[in-house]
Length: 43
Image 1: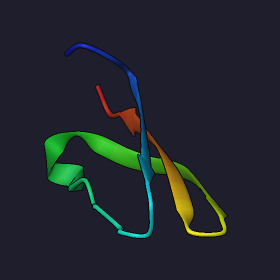
Image 2 (image 1 turned 180 degrees about the vertical axis):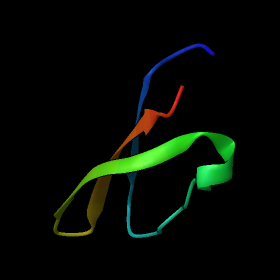
Image 3 (image 1 turned 90 degrees about the horizontal axis):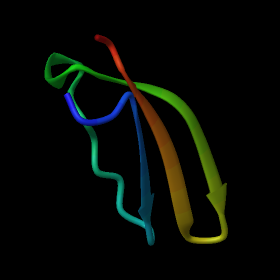
């Protein structure tokens, strides 16, 4: 793997990373229409 953590910033959409891909949603922050999600690698 390349990284143990992944941050996704989106302007109002909600892309999902499947747990089968090895990522777990750890935290989420929303400010106005900007969404930040922190994923961690299960490995």
